[in-house]
Image (cartoon, rainbow, N blue to C red):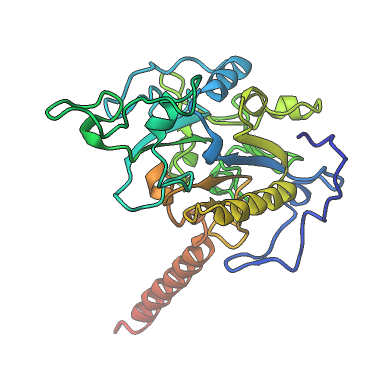
Length: 338
């Protein structure tokens, strides 16, 4: 869905009754950036429950944005060959292999179903007399169920820049290279970036990176050039399962809440949203996720906080300390005996 879709009734994006425990009422980020007639804030909702790990989003991102290849080296820990987000990887599909302990509900909510037995029946009669996974002769390991275990699952998630409501990278950029667009997203202007690197440690998600041999900062732009012409970002366009959904942020939040509720009814009680709440430490993300495990499992910080949150207090305390030292110096000079 793009911002040109008008088939649904939208609620106002900036509901002043929804406050943030750190920052107060939700700001009109585009309006504060100088866009008085801005369109609805746009973003991503990534439903990891339907991600198949095809990496079409990674390829589409690289092709559209002319992002150079990044080595494609296997980690040795999984089939992931891009390892993480960086200056040359603006979309990263994580592969997490898990062994589910015996008795724990599976991600699909069908712990009592032998998925290998079901797979053998595909294309044949349901009454096929194929041996069950655990019926291999004594001393022989079933090729479809090594060690007799069937509780394996893959967690896959396409990670990207979060386009935070309160973006620390914007706060620390000394040149104005990083700016907020009329769609509420955060973009780097490489022709202005001086390569200082301040934005790299400022990002609570570790998204921004400096390109080797270049020095400038690079990250996802949420395909700003495509949004301006009414097109959805390349990654969302290429996703074959609609795991990556694009549209007005408030609509995506409603859709995500409905999806989680339906998963809970289906027995997938571990389903949860990450980054959608305006009450989190960054005021809510412009790109948020539906996860099936703790955020740390996906390489995401459990409680992200904008890194510049305490800067005003730090400067205030520094000023008080400087004034105190100056006063002590003057007092000691005045009291010196002549």
